[in-house]
Length: 137
Image 1: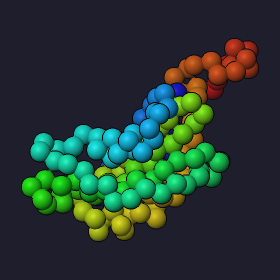
Image 2 (image 1 turned 90 degrees about the vertical axis):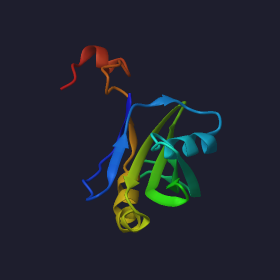
Image 3 (image 1 turned 60 degrees about the horizontal axis):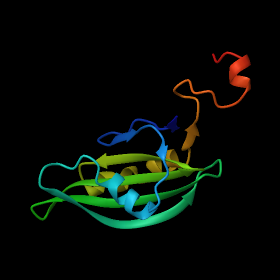
């Protein structure tokens, strides 16, 4: 099971997402952890905001924005989408070298985040009885 997104390539912005996981009890703390993923040595993340949204297919998610700071200097800007799919959760993280680059990419990123959906059978997991009878293409 994984998060599925429709996302174009964006110059100077890395966009990553991965498998679904059991949903967290504290979604705000989890969203902050997603934003702080793989920080450079000696860095901290300053969260600047949360916004609740809904995908184009009706799944709830939060957009979290922040910056990575090293020695009181901003070294990255980050935007994350943290999704809730029944008892599962998934996240996407955009990393830009500056706030200006992230701000310029924000409309495209928000449009991509709105396409987030679960791909329940991405790893070959049987999701419904039909999966036992009809082979996947």
